[in-house]
Image 1 (tube, helix red, strand yellow):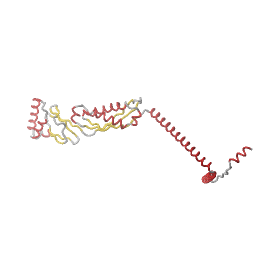
Image 2 (cartoon, rainbow, N blue to C red):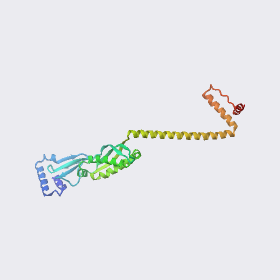
Image 3 (cartoon, rainbow, N blue to C red):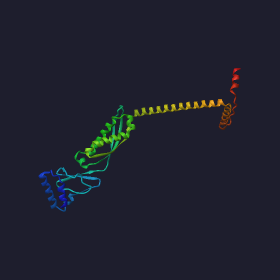
Image 4 (cartoon, one colour):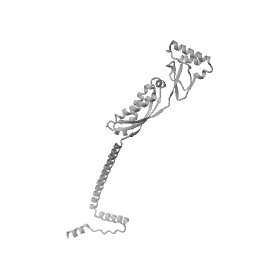
Length: 270
């Protein structure tokens, strides 16, 4: 009899006189049909579930029940099980016009869970479907304020902005959005080719600049070397012997006879 008194205490006091009569009749009917009726009164919810009990259409005080055993009255009570585990779903690819008038296709994934089972049942018809539709709309709205470069480089910031927006919007539904991730950004084929050509041209320009800087540094080094050689005539002879040694090591069949430039100039004058 203890659980009958507890059931009466947790019932809603606003059900009225007719409601109390029905509740008392249900209790009496349950007592008369014991022990068969006990199997209809005892319910079990799993560790990851919560039960919302309705008595004559009103939610019982005390909120969600579970996990474990709880009791209901067969004729006047009904209940709805709510899964409290984290749920994931994919956001379908959305065609988005960016701030700089580029059309891209973006998809993502959302992780959420039911934080308040009572709100998830009483405040909205289908919390899962509503969250899915809201995620699609939020993705389009957030990406519409970004240009293409920001979408490609600031995925974490966009995901965090979406998570905050979704969490605030679903708070009245008892939903907690834990994480949002941008999966893929698909660009039009023509834009991909244009970006590839731009990147290739940029790399070629950078390579030419690096080669020009190398030539400039080499010319400066040669200038400094020529000044050093001009100060010491013996340095030129040592450089000449070093060059012969290098040539002999690589191509030992080659014979070189050096001629002074002054001798050649004298022949040219004649």
